[in-house]
Image (cartoon, rainbow, N blue to C red):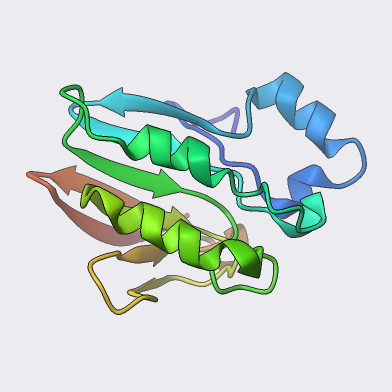
Length: 160
């Protein structure tokens, strides 16, 4: 990643939390949950690694996510980025419904992004307006570029 000549942001993954990974991650990258607004789009990075927190009912932090998605004059749409997708065995099943309800509550989520499943896929797990983009893992020697324009998005795949 040091060779990249563009800015990048990191979302915590389950392997980042092994051993002293939480401490190392915090020192290198900062908080596990964070957000920023760029060009009226709010990018929300959320820790969804429930298994690594022993399915304690606090990961992901649904209240924090709800506060981030509350409508504001500063943004019109949001992109929610996380590692473990809902309805996966590593996601706290007791939080599936509240997670989904939070994503749809304000009708402002443009799409979500995750990568835990390693393969590329665009799908709608809830059969509603929430689109999930599962991005390639490094093992495929590919990466996804997501272009956002006029409250629409387009995903392309490039080889390394």
